[in-house]
Length: 123
Image (cartoon, rainbow, N blue to C red; front, top):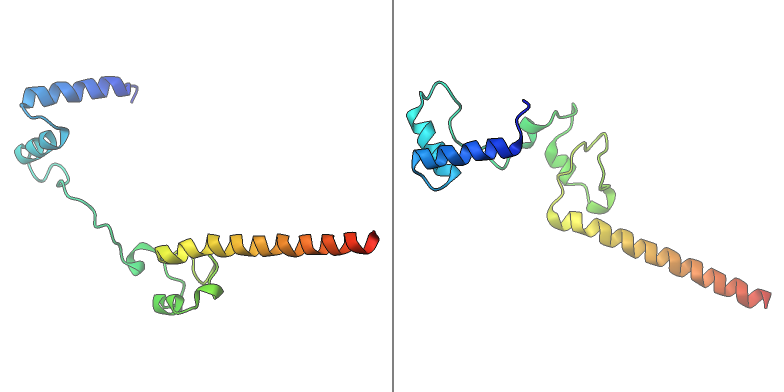
């Protein structure tokens, strides 16, 4: 729109002073109460939890319950065709980096053991 954020902020502060309130929230409530309710959207929050079926398009023939019943070690932590969105719990999301770190440590330990063995054979 070609208006700086400073200008917008200053005009909001001026409006708050003219309305005689002490916060932007109270000013928004006061303005919403005085306007025609059919003119603007009501001041309400969106629900924080949106159902699986309403938020995402489901692939045909798949049930969200079937996707959750798969053991975690068979479910990759990235999107797939069968499971296009992450529905893991916080614990499951935390488990993947721990498992990857443990696997990396074990791989480097095996590589180190091979290098020690080769060093002993060649010396």
